[in-house]
Each structure stands twice: as C-alpha cells, then as structure tokens.
Image (tube, rainbow, N blue to C red; front, side, top):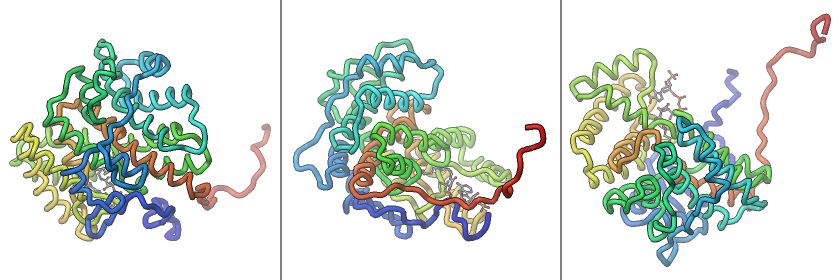
Length: 367
Ligand code: ACO
C-alpha cells in the first residue's frame, strides 16, 4: 500500500460532534461532557439515551416507549432458520420494522427511540422462537428499563435486580463511542439521506465483525481454552507466535486502558456472579498485558471494552451468541444520535480511491 494512502482512515477527522469525546491518550470517554465511570455507576441507560439524543441529562427518569413487535416483524423473525445468528435476526427485525414503518427523511429523535426500544424485544423474541417458545408480551415489561427488558424478553421472568443493574451499566458503557466503524457506517448511510432504519441495519452489519463487536464471545473461548492461570503464559506465547490476536486487547484509539474496560471490571466485581471466572480473567489479563508489551514494544496493546464485557454478559446469564446482539441493542443509541447529528449539519460522505488497476484496454478477442 503506498505510504500516502491511509486505508484505515486512522487519524482522519471526518465529522465534528458534540456527542462524545474519546480521548485515546488519557483513556477518557465522555458522553456530552459526562465521564463514563460516573454514568455507569450513577446513571441509567434509558436516561443516557435521552442525553445522547436530546443533548442534556433528562431531568425526569426516562423509560423508553414500549415496543410491541408488529405481526410483520414477528413474521420476519419466525421466517428465519432457528440456526441463524441472533445478530442477523436483530438486523432483520430492524429492516422489517423500517420497511413497515417507512421512516422518512430527516430522522427524528422519536424514530430513534422506536428503534432503540425495538432491540430488546426483537433479540428476546428470536431467542425464544429458536427454543420453540412464544415471544413474551412486552406490555409486561413496560415498567423496566431497556436492559432489564432484554432479560425479561429472553426469560419471560422479572429479572434479578443485581443482574438488571449490571446489564444496565453495560448498556450505558456501550451506548456510544465516537466515530467507530459501525457509527461511521450509520453516518455514511445517513449522509445519503437514506432512512434511519437503513442506517441502523448497516451499522449492525459493521458491528458484527470480530475486530469490532464480535470479540466478547471469543474472549470467553480464550479464557475457556486457557482454563487455569498456570497455562496462560504458554497459551498466550503460542497464540502470538502463530500470529493470532488476543481478543479483548488493543484498540485503534486508546493507547492506554480503555476506560470502559475499567468501568466494566467494577461492574463485574459488584455482580460477583462467578468469583473464580472473574479471578481467572483478572490473572490472565496481567499475563496478557506483560506478553503483549514484549510482543509489540512500540505499540501499546491494552485491555479493551470487550474483555470485561464478556465477564459481565456471562454473569447476567446471556448465551455467548447473544453478546454481540446485546452490544448492538445498546449501541443503537449512539448510532441514531450520530445519524441525527449527521442529518442536521453533515454533507454527503464520499472519499476518493486511487485507481491502480490496468490501463484502458480492449476486450479479449472474440468477445
Ligand atoms: N493481539 C495481538 N496483536 C495485536 C492485537 C492483539 N489484540 N491488536 C493489534 N495487534 C498487532 C497487530 O497484529 C499488528 O501487528 P503488525 O504491525 O505486526 O501487523 C499491530 O498490532 C497493529 O494492528 P492493527 O490491526 O493495524 O491495529 P488497529 O488499530 O487497526 O487494531 C483492533 C485495533 C482491531 C481492535 C486490534 O487491536 C485487534 O484486532 N484486537 C483484537 C480484537 C478485539 O479485541 N476487538 C474488539 C475491539 S473493541 C471494539 O471494537 C468495541
């Protein structure tokens, strides 16, 4: 790749935003000025949604509107193979909802709230349908916040308050994160004056990959394979020697510990769902950080959000294939907030490429 082509767009500023500050050098994350650790400890996800969409901390306790899945959305979910990835089911639900609802340009905060509220209901419905169970009636969970609604939509039961609180903190921590790949995707789609549901569908697709939102289930696999901290050094050295990446470490922007990882470690400690599993994660993290520093002395590779996200999501009882859908449901807040901002004062996003293919030439003889 020629040195003047920045194929990862690293360091390129493509938007001005008032939504969040991602300070990679200091390891700081602020949502509209409020620090992520404070929001996770003292806020609630539903109020964070208000902050992100409307710009100020809501004065009253906000709970998202109820999301009754329409027959169209339910039919789309029922039509999927039960073996399909729940994240694909979520993307399908957003798509069916958008097709039915016809979300016209420009996007609005009310549309955003509908999409954010749809997520828990859709993921829960698919999780039940694939187990041959009927989706729950979402009217039963109207009193709950979005994170607790996800637990209710999966189990059909009133969630345990400690688990609901832990998942709410996880949702808060994952609600927004600057111009990451999925948010950029949402902004690109919005910049064409396409609708908000399409922006969210595209963002889900971008989040799916293991370099972005697909990592936490792999963090769990990694810890399962290591099994005991005694094996960590050999296991990690061998993985790095094979050229593999350690899941839950490294970040494009953070040059120090991801502040979301620090916040989620505290959430995991408070939840204390499985003390041995958490201790294994903490011990393996120490070994991994030491070996990553040896492996890439010039590139800080620190713990990222996905590492302790995996412990929290496991602790609240989610199956591993629901980890990334939970992330997507939470991040719908950030995607839609950015789409609103983009629609408000952004331009069509359209970078250039440099053509390095063959010169103009005739078709092969005989064509
Ligand atoms: N383990 C081992 N080596 C790593 C890791 C890692 N976790 N992360 C980066 N490196 C190495 C790469 O192999 C590369 O080495 P090279 O220069 O010899 O080829 C070098 O560091 C730079 O890697 P890039 O991919 O260019 O760096 P980038 O900034 O694009 O990477 C990323 C960021 C994708 C998150 C990376 O650190 C990674 O793959 N981490 C593991 C997956 C992960 O945890 N994903 C979740 C990210 S958080 C989120 O998106 C919500």
